[in-house]
Image (cartoon, rainbow, N blue to C red):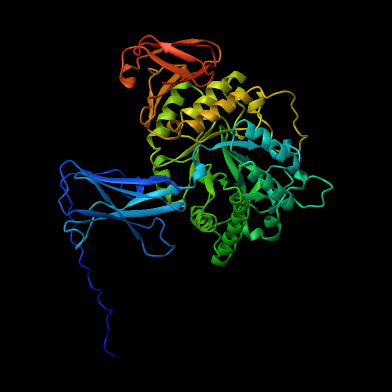
Length: 564
C-alpha cells in the first residue's frame, strides 16, 4: 500500500505588529509574571498614552476575558480618547479570578485593527473582602462550645475586627491537635453545646447565621497534606497514605524542620498525591477536593475565606486541581495561604492558583533593621502579591514571648496594620496581654477574663484607622524616613487623594528605652513653615514650628500615627 502522510497545516499570517505611536506608555504591566491586581466590583482603570500625539483617526479597544462567560469568547471594552495623548478604559470586574486582556488599535477609524505588539496583560481579581481585612484567630479548644463562640463574635466585632479565623474544626484524632483530623467532614464533639439535640454541622450553621447578622466573615482552615494516624482515611484507605517501611504501621509521618534537623510529627501521616496508580490518585484528588469544597461552602455563606495550611509543602498538581474547583464553585471565597517560598515562585503560582493573600511573618524579624528590610520587601512586590500580616500567629509565641514585653503589642500591631499593605490581624489572647501563647492542642477549660481587655481599645483604634484611610491599604507608598535607626521605624504613607498629604507612622520597638526622633518633612509636605497634624491614636492635635524639624520623643513601646 502507498505511504500516506499527515495533512500539512496552513501557516496563518502573523505579521509583526506595529505600535500605534513611537512612544507608548501603559498604566498596566504586561506578561504573565507581571500581572496586576484588582477587586471585583471596583473599577479597573487602564490608560495608554504617548509623549507625542495619537494619529487623528486612532481608535483602541480592550479585548478581555474579564466578565466573559466561562469557556466563552472574550469581550470588548472601548478605550476613550481623553485627549490627543491619552486613551482610557474603565472595566468593573464582576467575578474574582485570573483574567487576561490585550489592546487592539486602529489607525483608520475602526476599519482595520492590529494587535498591540507587547505581550498580553494579566490581572488577578480579588474578592472585595481582601481589602482592609482585620482577622481574629479564635482557638476553639479554649473557647467553650459553638454557642459560646457566637457570644465571642460580638466582643471581637467591638474591637473592629471583621473576620474570624477558626483553627480546623474537624473531629480530633488521638493527639487532640486540630491539625490531626480523624474525620474531615464533621465538627469535633468537644465543641458542641449539650442538650440541644442538634449535631455539629447544625450548630455550626447557627454560628454562621450569627456571623452574617454581624457582617463578620468566617475563615476555615484546610489541612490538605496530612491526616491523623488513626483517621478514617488511614484506617479505611491506608493505600492513600505514603508508605514508609521504617515505620511500625508502614505509614509515612509528616515532618518539620528544627535546629536539630528534620523531626517527625508522629501523629500525622502524609497523603500520597503521587500514588503510582492513576485510579487511586484520582480518588484521592476527588475526595480531598470535596473536603475543601465542603468547608468553602460554609465560608461562602459569609463571603469569607479558606486558609491553606502549609501550602509550601503541598502537592503542586493537586493544588492546581483544587484551586480551580474552588474558583469554579465558590468564586466569592477568598484564599489565604500559609506559603513560604521565594519571590520568583510567588510570582508564578499566586496568579495560577488565585491566591488572594499570602501570610507575612513579621515575628520572624524581631530586630528593627531586619523588620524594616522585610517591610520594604513586602512593598516592593505589593503590585503583584498581597499579604496578610498579623502581629503574631497561633504557631508563634505571644507578643511578649516573641518581642520581650507585653507592651511591645503597641508598636508591633501598629507596624503590622499600618506599615503593611492593608490586611492584618491577631490571635486570641493578644487583647488580654497574655504572656504566653494559648496552647491549641488538647481539650482545655474555657478561658475566662474579667474586666475590659488590656489592649481592646487600642486595637479598635488601629483597626478603625485602617478602615478609614485608604493610604494604609496599598503598597509602594511607604517612604522610610528613620535613617536606619536601630530601634525606631518611621515611614510616611502618601495619600493620593486630592487635597490629602499623608501620614507619618513612628514606632519605638525598644522595650526598655525612650528615643528621640527628628525628621525633615518639608520636601514631602511642600512647605518649610509650620505644619499641623492630629495623632490618630490619641486624638491630640499637634503643631510643629517648621516642617523640616518634626521632632518627637517616644517612650519605650510607643507609637504615633500623625495625619497631615
